[in-house]
Length: 250
Image (cartoon, rainbow, N blue to C red; front, side, top):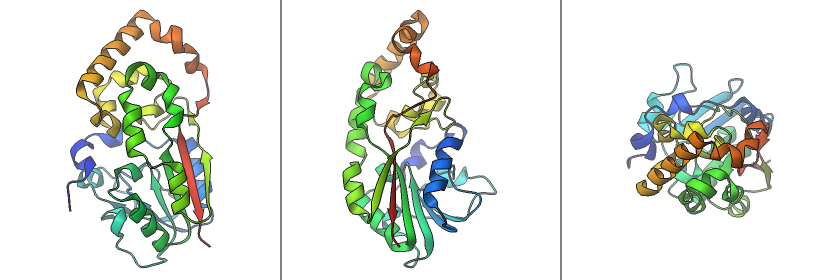
């Protein structure tokens, strides 16, 4: 198997990418009455529901090694070739992972094949991030990466039967420290351990990252960031482009 992305960048991932309960609740609702669930591109198992029979598929040994001892059983494998028979699970889910797949269409088709009732995909629409301070003022290359890596929501919907799309606002103080999930705590982006846990930081040009970090650090020290964006610290949630795509198969 080719080297998985997170075999290279997944060190310390589980310490930063904790499950956010309010996002987990949306996923639980989308799974509905499914009792058996396949988690594709499962990573460290952050959003695996504890009240269902879950099987995980993950290509990265680095990520598998960080799964808790009580996590769901995991199979090393890729979305494009799931090692299960047709209709093996009530539902299949993929949580902020499809941008790492080599063939998104094939991966979605495999999820439809192995699921009996529904497919749940949590992904990003890059458009709302365009005016977010993190992208607009400091790291414009992040938008280019997300636009290039994230399959358009319309294409995802077209590839899945009976698909619906919901916006999932990201709450303040989000426990899951993904790139634009930290929209209200700019100081966290200065921490290299936090940056290591999001693939976006590994795709932007290093020179842009260094310039953006220097500018952000200076603006935080001078109070410039809070002068321009301080109201964000008071918001309970913000739509940064997180989208929940649900396909009903039965």
